Image (cartoon, rainbow, N blue to C red; front, side, top):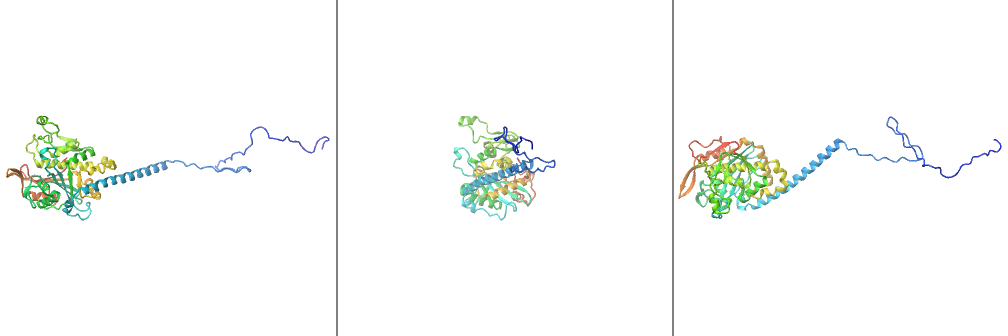
Length: 392
């Protein structure tokens, strides 16, 4: 050691200027593995981010759609079931007791349902009349995938049990739906399994709720003056009647009700009560199409209970769904449209339709036991018969 040198070095105390040195970030090798951090400071665990892949997005959307579908189905069923329960309460116990119980499901065995519309014309001279304005039997045959309609003219002269002879629509006024069903069974020999009474005051509200119905009018119509839309007699006297052009047209509730009630067409004097029954069948079929349409099904949670307001029926919610399924599965070109008839006559100054033996053949056609045949040549304007195909 040289002279004057000390055996140690002097260091200045305190902190050096500049930033505090830190550990270097771990470096990565080319193969992706991390190098071990330098000793002295532990490495913080790094949070793993969830990557939003295309598959996860699709799965989330599907689950959301399933959830919405379940909510819609539950809401639709509750609204519809509530409306059916109210419609069941409107049917009298006597009418329910007059029905012949149907064994099994509607989708597995044929069933016959009676549709009756009560006469509520907006006229003072008919305010007390409580007759059935429309009488129609609907038969569903699941084996043949066919729906058959049978119209019964309201002027048909029949024996009303316990009340003698009269028009068939008078049975409703004399003894309600129970007597009407007994009379129809006595005339046709058909058992009535279910019944639906339609209040025509609410009938047009139902069609408006559905957004209208589409009907194919086979020929131009100018009706007689009934249910005048004007408030004064002067206006009604100058009014020419209800008009309907030929071809397919969309009808709101009021015009659909008027169309189904037209009995006289001044452009074709040959039209009569049987022609009126054909129009009613067309409107009923159009309502069925609207009830099973996607638009109505989409709105079911909001209008489900309103759709049943015009009805008093024994049909349950499940049976309504079975009928809807039958409607979907039955091709329109196989639908059978039948009518009872006879010859026009006057008894005691009152107009009647006197039934003929051909009505028995029509009943066999209605039941599928005989081939459908149109009215026989020479049978007149009230000839009974059946035709196949879409009448709308």
